[in-house]
Picture 1 (cartoon, rainbow, N blue to C red):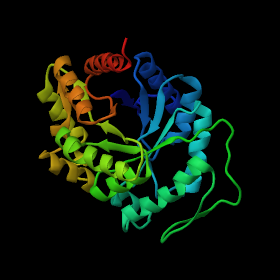
Picture 2: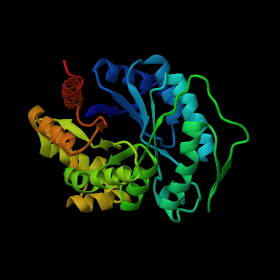
Picture 3: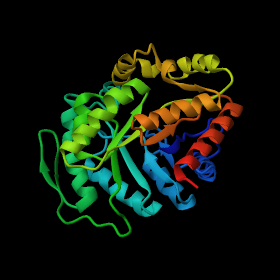
Length: 310
């Protein structure tokens, strides 16, 4: 299992992009494999990754995730390929639907039939990423290239979809390269996420999909305190329908119940178990006190070296 971390701008940062570059350097120096940036309402993830990729070598750089509705897939393909060229082809493009409250409440778009939206989106995005041309007319989206899109130095990037429900996992397995999860516990990962997307990919004749598991991880001597803090920090994720459905599958009352917390041995055991269940990647958001974060990074560095071998 490849080991990565999420990044986010520190509260006291003097410059947001400089701060993200420094975080990426620390992740690379620790020997981790990847850094993942969310797309929120402040930093543009792909722009930041383009800068990080010019400053920090080696590590994979992913978005987790760019919402699809605000960006036409022809526009996103252009952004992604430009970022690929800038990073030396180290981009993993993670995309997702976001949530009804965001898409309708903030952007004013309809969130009707989101799986249809994603299928049409991928029907445009994937040909552009891989072949530089597309001609598609769906129920809600149209795209026609007037000339082939070629970007010197850019190879096709992997495209991962934040797929959790059955319909989304099926179309992701059929059309994309894997999924990025969030707040999905081990039972749900093993019994729902991995088998669903793997079967869909196999039926479509595609390669084994990547399964990037996003969960709060904290090496600590006081896991009960960590979970109490997590219950407050991540409370919103127990209320959003897509995450709530995964927590219900897990039998979890809330996000705190799927946090990976404990001493080094306990956390390592839980993470290795997820790899056995089919997780190909881990993406960890920084969490806990400064000392707990240091211990967590040290453990993740050790696990990354296990993956790399002698």
